[in-house]
Length: 403
Image (cartoon, rainbow, N blue to C red; front, side, top):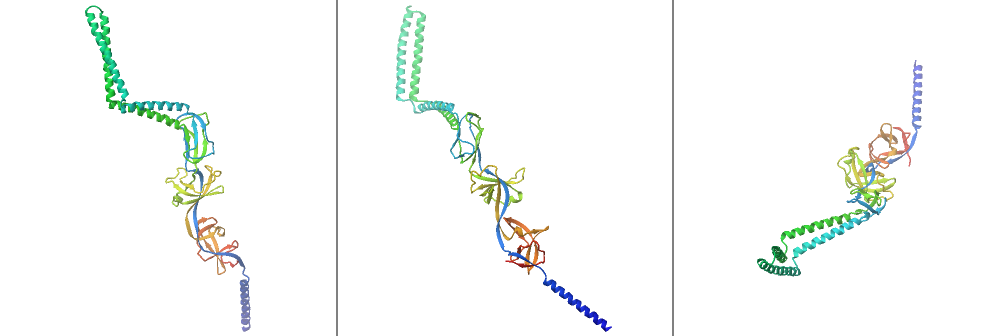
């Protein structure tokens, strides 16, 4: 019996020794995987909003004539650069020139009449009026004396009744002429009455207004640019009849802007004065937000944001309606940022770090993106993030850090 017990104990000891050897061998044979790591540090990167917009001008103006007429000359062509004051087009102004000259003559005549009334008659005018009175008086005296003689002859039967009546008519006319001459002399000596001066002033002002209107029409027969910019389109040709108010040319100013629609969520993050970057087919420019719409677009329900370019695009790259990539910097975010290629996903975003030479999985919450990096929550400063060799790792694997 004792031999049997001793035999079983010996076998048990041998088996235990074999198990211990296998465990030690497994531990000795565990695979160590090489990885490269980077130490997590706190970093700060700009936070941006990415949108698509269109190139436009802060001012697009349509130029037209105020009066209808035949287009005499077009001075510009589509795509041409113009400066403030450059003439764009003009009407055939021959008839307008005649109208201006006639109106000017009427104005000067009315002005002379008014000035004459205000200044009073000259001494020459007074002397002429006195001379006319003397002539009328002499004529009247002669006619009166003749009439008295005709009456005496009629009483004696020497002349007919008709001859007497003719003499009486001449006497009445001489009296009327004398009275008119005396009244004219009185008016010349007394000057024009207040109501006469006012009437002449009204005539002068009406003539002046008519002249200024005609001159304005002549001035409006030439269209000039009031901005520096580029001709977007020319809508008439020389010799065509241009209707009043109908655009002849369209000009965009040199101030370049970009418009984009920002969502309701993001519009709260942007402010006038914020910087923005613009990329048009690889041509980059810098700008600043100058206007934010307070009402959303009816169709897109986005808020229009206007960005004025502070670094202008060349005229070869600045085409109205061109698509632009817009990046609006809304601030800086300080925290843990990791390279996007180091992040893996199996339903959840995660990375691997090294702790005590072992792989530890860390689930992440992703935040803002800047270029190839993203801000994350779930990592702490000082941890060793695996950046190479993580594709075939699992939580708990033993690793060796390579330089």
